[in-house]
Image (cartoon, rainbow, N blue to C red; front, side, top):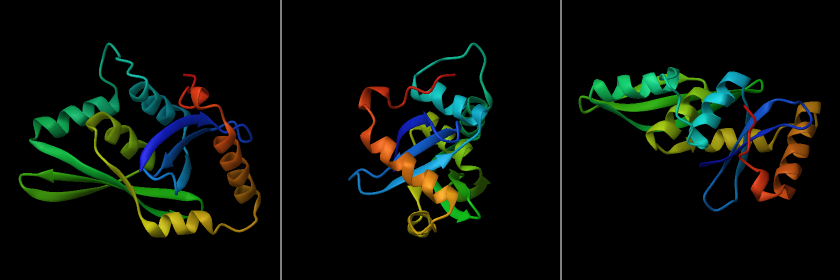
Length: 157
């Protein structure tokens, strides 16, 4: 999946990371907190800070330990909460670290690592019932599909 955009949900007024597959078949919005959105936006926009932020520090620490981020995976969706894992290779062996999706995505952007989403998560996201959250999700999907491409990814920090 690619991080296509970081926008503010016009309904909930919350930041949303938009993941989309390379073929534009699958679309997955993940609502994140403001601080997490800022960490993602800084990297997406190529902004360099005078001192390393948490995700920059994590990237540097992983590198100094001769490890690499192999990939990040959005693994679960449970009660409207997404779960993720950061997959490292350290000393030739795989290491899996539990993570919030926003932190995993922020790190993946900094390390140019791929982002994957389990099929079960995509299926669950598509199959949400007609609850208020699902309606909001559908409004966001329509808004995203009709949005001006120039305005996407322009998250205001």
